[in-house]
Figure 1: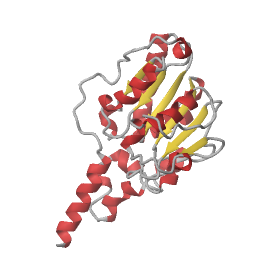
Figure 2: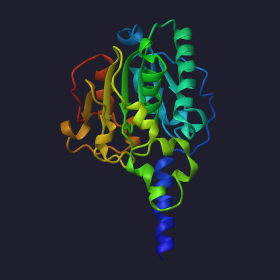
Figure 3: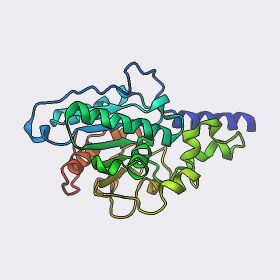
Length: 261
């Protein structure tokens, strides 16, 4: 019975960490510009949607479509190896991608909307790879900025350190990677930082670990919309969450639309 329960918990933990498992069909490095027409955002920075652990590009089409509908030049970045590997290595690949987007659009800077592990990749780029010179706004959606207990479950069960998944090990609370990332200023440069989190996030626990310090705007959806139920993946699907993203991209006040569809 104990073995059966252990196997069940491990299966749930693995499923939680590997939210998306559909094989990717698009090149995650080659930028694809799908710009919408409205002038309001046409002159704004291009927006890169940064995927999370096991997050294939197609999973981020819903939020990308909303951004395009608002006129933003929008790109989706799928993490190398679906984000299972070393986060700093993914960040270095991301730096190359940012330069490709800037070259293809002629933009001096981009804005980032990053989900889950993608928020850590983007923050490492900003803090350790000089990315603050090329980014105007950083918006994270359910990123384990200070780690998550979910990443500790496999080790807790005595079955190894995150089953050998490097990114999972780095997202463990107290990891050397997070100690380095969170050492000193959380919000370097002139970038405007916003984090968005939800009480129902099943992967970032405690949910308070999805915030950053030092002047960031940290938004808890339920502080404004207490009846809104949004899960981890829901952060890139939910219309209320998107209204917060949209406000952050124009440096507006935090005014979520709790009834958004």
